[in-house]
Image 1 (tube, rainbow, N blue to C red):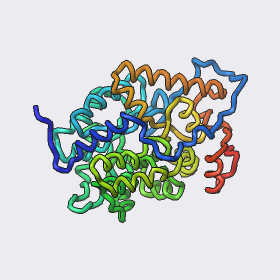
Image 2 (tube, one colour):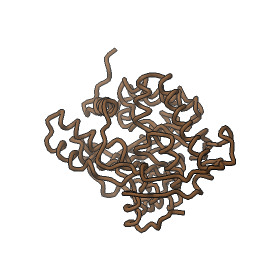
Image 3 (cartoon, rainbow, N blue to C red):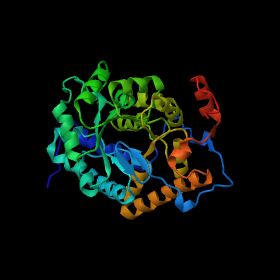
Length: 369
């Protein structure tokens, strides 16, 4: 059976994103800040290791641990088995999961199954549909998504919530990028008001300030995913794609803006005071990183590349990786004397180095608690 084709090149772009991300770390020049965060050791934990409770409430769901597999792929036939593997794992471990941008499926119905497979494999898990904020506006000859199309994306996945990703750094580097942005906040406000499903505003690697988070809250979003700098840089990913095509300008822009963005740890501290659930995505590589994000006030963390690499090796590899990640997270809470995730959020942590400098210049008083 021939693979579906799309003259826009979106399915091929989705495949290239996975291939580039999996092949080698596409990191920018910004670190996420986790190395600057220190949890205080409790030599008398006063809680049994096995009694540490990782359960977390997010978007009306109880997660067995405060962990989401970030939306990464879909929209190409080779994405279906990846999403299926990820979904089986989140169902098994009681976690949540997003899918990649669903624009390809909206344009080409034959590709919708590459997203819908997630619900087939994870019937009870928290699942998040995904569209891009730029697609809520007319982009040249490409009309804005309609409310009916957005609802279709949600229905395809039978999703519990919708991610609207804010990826203008990626778009400005991408040769095919959609760079109209005037009116995006108003479009997002209208969408939030029209949908019954909660909306999560998600950055994709450049981070978030408190001022921007306040505007997103006013627009009606239910949660924030800070998508901070320090993990996979889509400026770098798109620079590699541009270089492979001989696109000099895209290559130059990606290289120049590889250091653009607000570190994830800083983004968490900035956005938590807004009062919405905060998901810390960006450079989360270990359960200890996750614990540090939670100690800064995040409600949950998002993991992407490590889960993708394990998923490409199969179910057993992904399960083993997640077991190790969750063991690290549980150990961090135990050693900090925190019986629950909520208790960890209330504890003091030490912030040093570049992260402390960032926070001081942004007006935060240290220590944070």
